[in-house]
Image 1 (cartoon, rainbow, N blue to C red):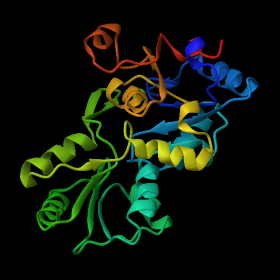
Image 2 (cartoon, rainbow, N blue to C red; image 1 turned 45 degrees about the horizontal axis):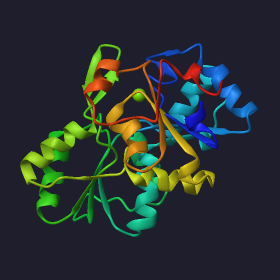
Image 3 (cartoon, rainbow, N blue to C red; image 1 turned 45 degrees about the vertical axis):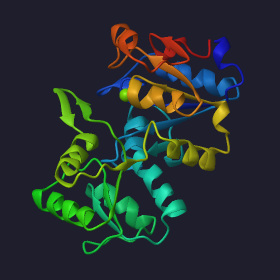
Length: 257
Ligand SMILES: [Mg+2]
C-alpha cells in the first residue's frame, strides 16, 4: 500500500483487529509473517488496563502467535511509564484490578489509601462504592485525576460492559473534575512506544477497528493509521465520523501485500 511506504512498526489493536472474542482471524498469522519477512516489526497494544500484559501474552500464545512480554503494551504500561517520567515519587490512590495493582507495585509506584497526590482509575472490574467515594473525596481535596483510557464500553460476547471512561463520568459528575487520559489516542502512547522500540513515530502505523481511539491515535499525532472493518466500525460509521484514517481495509489480510 503506497501510503504506508517507509513505515517500520505496526501498532496493532487486538479485539476486532487480529481476533474477535476468542477466535483468531485466519488472515492474522500470515500477515504477521509477511511483516517479519519484509524486515518490519509489530507490537500489540490494548487500551484494556484490567488484565496484566502477561495475560495477553498467554492468550496470544494460545492462539498460535509467538508473542513475548516485550511485544505487548497495555494502557496500564503507558500510565506507569507516564508516572515514572512525569510524576516521579507522587503517591497514587489506585482504582484498579488486582492485576493492575500488581503491575504498579512491580514498577515501584508508591500506592496509598490516604491523602494521595493522584487518584488514578484503570478499568476496574472490582470497583466498589467505597472506592468511588474515596476517589471523589480526594479529588475534591485537590488530588490530580488520571485515567488509563477513555473507552466508554468494552466489547464482550453478550454486547458491551461499562469501561473506564464511563466510570470516570460518574466521578466527574460528582466532583466537576475531568480526568487526564493517557491511553489511545493520546501522545503518551507514542512516548512509551518510541522508548520501547526505538522506532520514531513517523515510521509507525496505528491499526485498529475503533475510530475514536485506534484511528485517532494516528490522526491526533501525525501518525499513519489503518481502519480495519473486521470489528466495531462500519463504512456508514466512517462516513459520519470526523476521524479519517490514512487507509481503510476490510481486514488485516490486505496489508503488506
Ligand atoms: Mg478493537
